[in-house]
Length: 114
Length: 111
Figure (cartoon, rainbow over the protein chains, first blue to last red):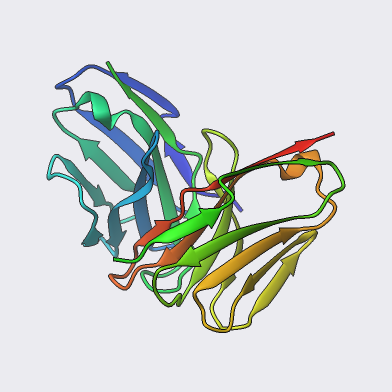
């Protein structure tokens, strides 16, 4: 069974540009989560999508947004990129949404903002 | 808000030695997850604990959740170079869907 997949593996952008990151969950999983892992800041929750709806959002500015498609894949968009957005972005999926549901992570997209 | 603290922050052990990593929560844990991460890569799920006093094992790794559900430990028996990596504990936040994580423990195993 295929795990969570993410694309691209690496992304280089300049300040002010927009970045789009993609995630495909494990087959049968309906919930998708996004996390940011920046150097020195640890793993921080960004967004949770379930059944196409945004269910929860972490403490990130509105320029971090996303969506979930009918096939449960998801996209994370980061607008007006800033240098501090450079990080590993991890996507996870779970069978159903929310509490006490194991999240399985993808390999991540490394975003570098110059 | 809930915080998770891991200790130690880093650990270097000789191959074959046992080791323990601890994860302490500022609040009661209702779902505690252990993950392993190779540097710069995704997280690999190891185990999930829910009940006070619960213990789970997989191969040479054992995780426990204390009775008060505020501390968990991860024990590796007879460590191997393949055990090297960053171990992260994560916990359900009451907001739903959100996991909070400890800062990680970096394990190196010397052959």
